[in-house]
Image 1 (tube, rainbow, N blue to C red):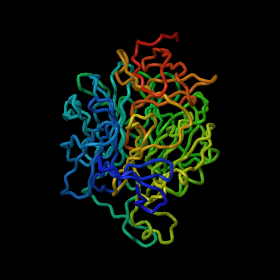
Image 2: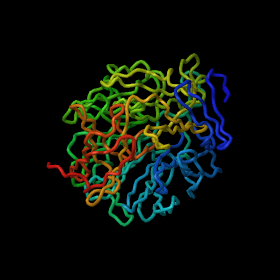
Image 3: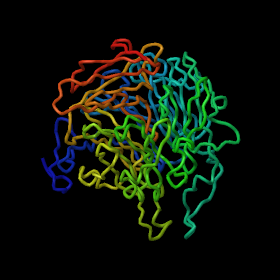
Image 4: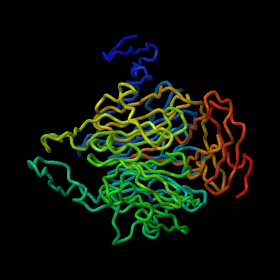
Length: 545
């Protein structure tokens, strides 16, 4: 034991593991030496949690480390979870593209998690060989996408039991054509604003089975000439209008967001303006980065949270019913604390097991010469992350300052993904920082309740991952609903399992209802608390429509 960083709290080094654990100010411990990739470029990489070798422990795939140099090789790395205590480098991708984001899904329904990596260049579909190594299936699948891509997600858009693929693309940018941009104040060289480039159309691929996809971007209405093109950085599969099919919310940079309403038959329309999520409460588009969704205020409706640029607040949209939303940022207490910092990755998650969704946001500017560009600015390149605690009714308090010494650090955060990597019933955090080491934060917050963990497994005509299913925990005269999705945040994807809080000391969970993605409704009873359960389609008590 010893206070290695002189913060007033005793830390611990274990000789057996060779690991140093940092005391988070009496709130828990942070493993500071498990995963330390190389330094990254300013628009940093994404990450995904998944059990890639089917040993029941969540592994982490880190999409690329790089310095922006033409002669540099690039690689993605898979770290296997060794029993919840350590991670070991297992596989390195052969791709030399400049990776951006990553998502995972069992797109071929063969029982293991495959990977899709977005790149500045050709995207890559990696098919799991069954042992946590992968083969490149991109050419056969025809999902390379010739654009600068950011985030992606798998979801079954037509109910055939096959997971389709949505790719959010960013800008039409050619590194061979240099545009010189500078500060208007002193002509210091700077990154160009996104408005200096045209947006790239997003891509939608229909899964035809057998490892093959069909590009339906144009016929679906996603990429249509004459329409505002995406400058997409985040994408969220969600059923915003509660009609039983998958829609897509796209967080766009400096242009209105998209909300693609699924019309059936492989057709979509942009309902963002009508629904109220295209713009903020002042009627302005924002520089949106990350996006997540969930029932924030406990009314049974989906709400959406988006992170934005500095001197714009992050945005919280409350569901009003019938597919309409209202910007509730200021009323939720999120206006002032989110105005100055720049947000990227975000997660809505119940970190303290009190039954409501709290918010984590990674912070960090994009301009490493910010103070030179804008003399006298109060903004900084490196910024501390934020943790906002929910009061259960959708009002938030910034508890960062009392949640451990991690929140005193000023880094340049980008992607964040949650997972219960140590299988103890709460969600931990993997944070990708630009130009700095990644960080694995173990959750040691005081628990307000017990918990139950759920993993869904679909059977035909539902996909094996059961993405798009709705899980409902009925308790206390109310209900908590969770949409099952494989991607969220910013260029990242989290634990595919769901953790739900129970009353403190509860031995069993209340009845759990699953509305599978194909519409079948089943009830699962007598599920023991404080453990994970695999719920298989067809093995519950079938309910009527």
